Image (cartoon, rainbow, N blue to C red; front, side):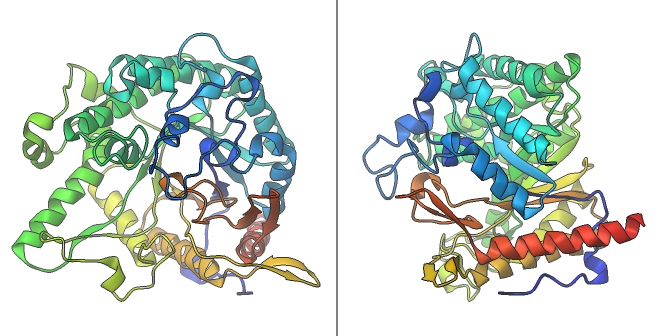
Length: 456
């Protein structure tokens, strides 16, 4: 197994730097109809023929709902400071409105209490894509009423858990919900209309800002923010066509989300490009979206390369690839973080997801089951170093979280793509910590020892 990442002077992290690991509700919980849980758009989407690569669904997933205590022990065994998880909105409010489903909320109360009992800070996400199907039937995120339904949901959750969690994220990756869910149709709810996608993006950002205002008015003590999936976007060549195409894509995938949050306006070039597909924005919306937040979460997996002709391919780039076909470009994370710090005035930044899928093999040895995933160790180690490089250039980083704690339902890819540092045998639900789990544990132990020396 690879040795822990050397603590090069430029990679020394401050004592209050938060180390964590992350999951999401639909990907691991299972228990699709247990204890009054309602249907989500992903429950419905999985039933569409051809929607999921292997024809699977999230009905059982990792059965985390029934294996909570053992999974909490796995998290504690890592030595992390924090665990990022999401709540299933239809588990808490089966129809997305009205009274709390007490049995569903009780699961998350046990989860939070279990983390606190183990000395782990809970980092809660309200929406990791699994919108209640009942709200989708009423128009979903394209309908402005869903904005208020989300604010109501946020207030219900914060009233019960806000004093016990370290932070609350409103939405995870609004770009994915908007574009993959409503423009390309690759993700739930499977719609294909650019104008709808842009209206969805606006309503997600608006609901974020209004939720922050409501939670602060209610006196919620948790730190509040949002998580965006971002990449540095560059042209495939120096041709004017590729440069222009890359600038537009940067606008659609980065600036369209960051500008309204921190500058109070959508980027002009993207707005002009959209024409009639630009969203309807009411007076006061942009002020609400720009409500100051306590942190910004960034999810990073790879860079973006744009060719006006569509000729560029990751498979021919010469860089190593993950099992998702994504290039491994740790320096892209440094580039992204430095650019974010340069171009916007931001609150403290967290990397809330970073990890990779590889074709892991479970080996049975006399000493027990093992998964030798050196590629994942190298991926995580190099990206932690990339965060350190950004900090050395003045970027105020507050934390880093590995995606993901365990193998899980990888959305439209089904169960074939394994991102976990813990292997899951889906037939038996047996968990096996991979070498990457052991490496991360040892790395965090080294960090803890370094903290102790500083404290002494």
